[in-house]
Structure formats: C-alpha cells, structure tokens
Image 1 (cartoon, rainbow, N blue to C red):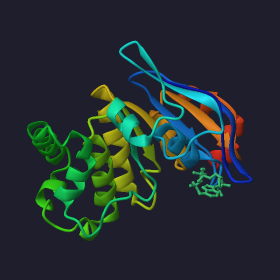
Image 2: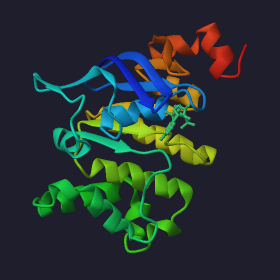
Image 3: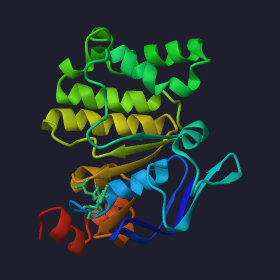
Length: 240
Ligand code: ATP
C-alpha cells in the first residue's frame, strides 16, 4: 500500500532521515522503533505530507492505482486515505470532544450522514467519548485524549493510519487498551504505521518492523523475529 524509496529529510543543515526505504503491505501493522531523535516522527510527517523529502520517492498504492505522493500537499493525501495522529495528540483542548471529531471530518463535510454514522461508531468503540462529547477535550484524561486523537484521525475515513507514539505518557492499563485498539483496527482492515518508543509492545503486535537509529534503518524484520534479535533486545528492549 505504501512504498518509500530512498527518502532524505532535512531541517536546514540537520539531516533527519537518510535514504530510508520501506514497504507497508495492505492490512498490516508496521512498527517503527528507535530512540529519541532517531527520526521516527520525521518519517511519519513525510508520509503525511507535513515534511517534503529532499530526495527519494513515496508511493501510495490503492486499488491498483499507484500514486506518487512525494510532493503532494497533506490535504490531498487525506483525500487519498492517509491520516496522521500526531505525537502530542494535537487535539484542541477548548473545543468539545464532538467538535474535535468534526474537525477530523472536515474534508468530508459534504457527507453529514456518513460523519454522524462514524461518530456513533466511535462512541461505541470508546463509550467515554460519547459520555463526554459536549465537554472540552482538555478535561479528558491523557488516555482519553489519546483515544480522541486516534478517533479524530479515523474521522477522515482513512485506509492508512499513521500513529505517532500513541502510548506516550499513559498508564500501563491505558497502554494495553490503546494497543488492543490498534489490533482491532487492523482486524477491521485498516493499514497502520505505528511509531513507538514502547518497543516491546509495538513488536508484539507488529506484522513487520523497522529500527531507526539517527536517520538510518539499521534493522528490519517480522515483529516477532526482532523481539528475539539479541541486538534489538539489548538496545531497545532493555534485555540482554
Ligand atoms: P522523538 O521520539 O523525540 O520525537 P523522533 O525519533 O521522532 O524523536 P524526530 O522528531 O523525527 O525524531 O527528529 C529527528 C531529528 O531531526 C532530530 O535530530 C531532531 O532534533 C531533528 N528535528 C526534528 N524536527 C525538527 C525541526 N522542525 N527543525 C529542526 N530539527 C528538527
């Protein structure tokens, strides 16, 4: 569904990603793990169109149509079916939970019936969001805000969901719930790229994973295989 071919991303003189190539098959969860500053967020931003690579190409393949999206503006990628739930969640704390969801559906604003159906679906998935739908999003707990961020990304009816550190700052029970949600979304047919520092949990659910280190992919393989790789265990799982 997604093919990155040797992409470079820089911020002025700072090179964040160097010749990154990766593939995301349709219906898979692909995890990107790595330490702080490895370039994980830059990778997701380049897929979502928030950063444009200085070289290389990004292709999005949907229903046998091969789209070169390397330089496509982000709203057109949303139209194609790519949604990003950013690090730090990016929700609007003063707006109500429901209004945050409506903002996620902005590009579908001419489909009010579809939006309402998806909002009801979201409330069935996360009942707390329904209970709190008229409250400012800033009054939700951290875990609830993360659920809102994921749900808002789903409101654009994506085919490819990009999740940037969904477990960040959450309590263990809530982290479990977020990972269970990611598995449920895959079961519903969504393709997911998951950026995580919680390498253990990410590898446990990932069909495939890439390890990023200061802008380079240093290792890749099936999630289960990387979990047993001695180098990955020592560097990212805190095990020897
Ligand atoms: P984290 O988990 O801390 O978010 P990360 O793996 O997601 O880390 P990135 O945020 O992609 O890493 O950062 C990769 C490199 O690019 C880092 O050296 C970072 O300092 C740099 N960088 C990221 N965003 C910018 C920016 N807007 N301007 C300048 N440098 C940046």
